[in-house]
Every structure is written in structure tokens, then in C-alpha cells.
Image (cartoon, rainbow, N blue to C red; front, side, top):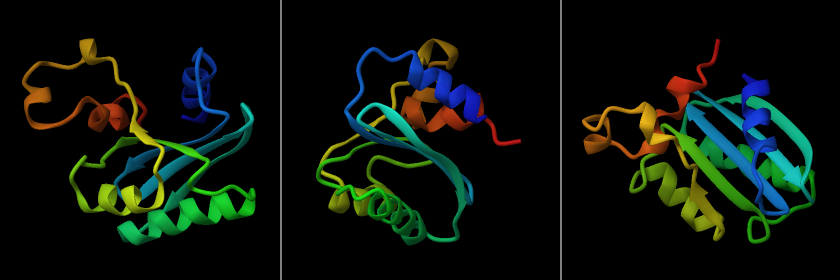
Length: 127
């Protein structure tokens, strides 16, 4: 799973210098941190509440002496654009975006009910 994530990130031509990517699964997130384009961390975290996710993100930044204001956060997986978790993240991270997902792999009906980033876990399942 980590190899797939790292290969996708390595193939990018543009990325913010300080970059934190999260993939949200049921009860688990995978966080990947780059500082000055260098991989620092890729790790899974179990969570019970949405607040747990925010705690992990802030804890990672504190450990690496980064601030949420200077770090770009990219999100994918089970996170709704107007949901509670996204509202918490909006309060913490001014620089954030949802991951681009190849919509050619999705049926048009799937995009009627969810954004493309929502389906990322189905292409990168946790074993």
C-alpha cells in the first residue's frame, strides 16, 4: 500500500515543499509527510473519532516542527467536502485540497453521489 502511495507521489511534477497527504479509510488513516520535497514519514493511524484524526495531524506537524499554516494538506478517501471532519480540517489548515482522482476509472453514476477523491480507498485498499 505504501509503495503505491509513494510511487504516485514520486510521479508528480509539482508538490508543495512541505506537504502532508492523508488517505481516510474507516477507522484508519494513512499520513505521508514530505519536508522540502523529502519523504519524512508514511504511517497508518487508527482512530475512533474525527477529533483523533486532527490530533494525529497536529502531532505529526509538532514532531517535525511544522505549522499547519506552512503545510499543504491533501485529502482523499472517506472525507466529505461539507462534512464534520472537513470542517475541523478547514479550521486548522489554510492550505488544503482534495486529491485528484482519475475519473476515467469511475462510472458516471458514482460521481452523482460523491466526489472522485472519495473512491481513492477502493483503488488503494488496506490489506
